[in-house]
Length: 182
Image (cartoon, rainbow, N blue to C red; front, top):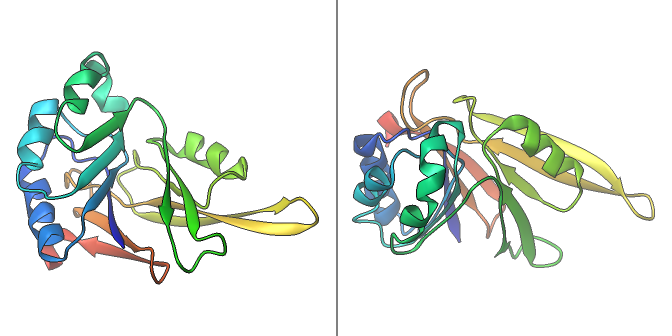
């Protein structure tokens, strides 16, 4: 299964729709959004042609929309939490067959989530800059566990080129995609 990870769209429906077209062509049916989405209206417009599910969190620029959280969640196939969203996905290459994921917006909470030892992957945004970091920690019996922290960059194109990430759970591979090169 392939998953798209995006962040910081800031209501840029044009860029979002380009990604949606690419995702549909590549049979990617799950989007994880790391915050700073834009309005419920811009999200609904952007997802109009998307055939999959959308999970996400609000970001610091979505503050006015916290009171409209219900509006986001009335959009078909959309689930948005305020600060943190946790989920598990199947991953044949993982020992347990399941990968535990957390999505948040800012880097500091992402690091704390990684240090909790409860997750395999943490997706976050806010900085607008793509980043991949590994956190290793001890887990009972001297075993080491690794958690990946992934920032897909920004889709809005405000400070850097618009980017997003694609994670393939079947082969445990992460790719950064640059919108202008699709």
